[in-house]
Image (cartoon, rainbow, N blue to C red; front, side, top):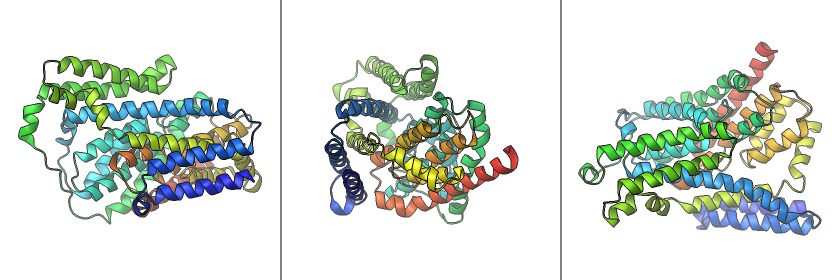
Length: 426
């Protein structure tokens, strides 16, 4: 009886998040209420489970993501307060909508493979803010950043949390995942970009910048130091993880600590007003903490399905009733738009871990589908949630303007992977 109630609560909470604008209730409030209700229902229906221990384990994993998000958003805000992104935006001369869309999307796609889709999305949205003045136009490009970041993250073993899980678990190897999924990932982005190229017309309007005021506050030397140091530290995070085998959030906290010390020393002789704008303490006050609480709520709510065995039951049901491994992965990808892809992939690993060898096509397609499928809805991926919080993008707006193109690209890439595996790699 509890499971139907959990499903009902999830649907109601999800609807409240989607209807944030007409309800005039912040999505973070809905997500937090949903999380608590889900765990109360779980402990009521399964009193024999060690709920406190299970909750602590899930919270440990979730807090790592939250601290990573907090650190990355703060670093990006700090670079932006020093006008660091102007170094890049000054190089992008075009204002044509189509050409700008391709440039932003391709930069995001390849950067996501080097960093990860979450960090890349945060950086690129900060960049888009400096390129596009109109709010709704900026929302559209930010939505495409989500799509591009998720597509670029899946062909790299360090580009997405699910590929990291599969890589560390021994299900995939670096060279093979790049070789087998790069083309499908590129197709998942190229197809919507090509279609949109025939639909977009005109130019974007650049945001107005008070250049005289910027000259008074930020010297070129300070701007360059913070930009290159911040960008370098962000690029160092995956290296830190590879060298130490420690979680990525420790790498981002190391980067934040270094930048904090540098800005404090750099601006120690400045007045308090200036320091409050250009040090980490000031950046922390400006970032959107409500988006971090939203992330906490939605991840905790989804995590409540796992202890009772619902996700494992779902995986077994797919295996029994569908059977075809390609279709199972396509369905998992579609589910990842609603349910966090991490527990879905964890369930698949638990079920098929001893069935398929390393670099089996099931694992590669699982990496592709679970990563790119999250783009279909804005709360289906960490990158989407971060962008939603940063730009206050409306859920329904994303469904109307981005979801169709994300779904089209997702299915096209899955079809390409299917064909490549059957015709070339078999």
